[in-house]
Length: 351
Image 1: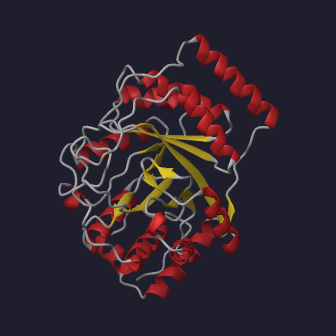
Image 2: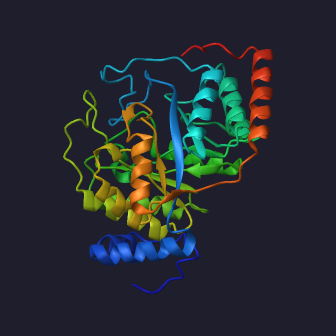
Image 3: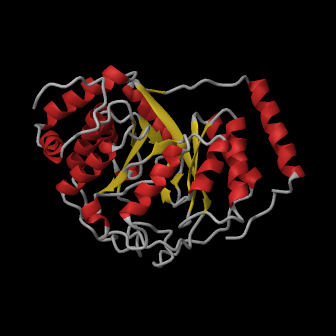
């Protein structure tokens, strides 16, 4: 392979080039990925996010991996949209535990006009705490993307999940192009992208190559790229799929780091089933972002104190962002609470 400037992102990666990265000897691949990582990021810092499900279950999508789909019986208790105040309390707790970004997920095909104003208030409240904000709400139209931007949203999560070729084997209620269109609207509104995929859904390596290539063709690359390991949930069509070899997963992290050198590559769902040694190899491969807390939407996740203990073993520290003073944060949340009470947003919106 020809030498490239690892500090300058490329947007013309071919399938053959990415396949060649996957085919490198494991230690050579990790060395190259770590080299790229060190040229673009502080080597021992990891961005920490917390994810909260603000509306759980009864989703009309049929994603075969998802316990929130209304198409499958996973015994998941359905919940209405959370109250704004409860969400802000969770955000404040996440910040206290070390998170710099607070992500909110709603099990929707697309947000309803009735519930959308409450989500906008959640975003404003999270921002007032000095946290970065992120939401995943499904498909968006142009007007919704604009309103999210006006509310100050930092990131919108909308994963491609897998390659275009394998996609229809996993989801039939939303097309690959639907996802690309929403990503284009989000980017056009000035919001940063959080976009990645899921490994271990029965796909072949060519599909992992295809997914990473699709992400790498985006101009610019998504600022955050979550690489998830499938969490198999009883009642979903993928509950008995064969496990993906951990080395194949780590290779996916490393290749994502190389082809998207300036993106945060997130070690996301599936960490509960990974040893500390596997997670350490993922960090060596260039992962520099995690979700932490007890849950990722509805599936378990290593507890925050265990993550901090692992960070201590590895000499890693949470990535810091510009903070408001404590007094400013207190004043901001107090003002936000008053505003929400005045607008009578403190009640449980309908599903």
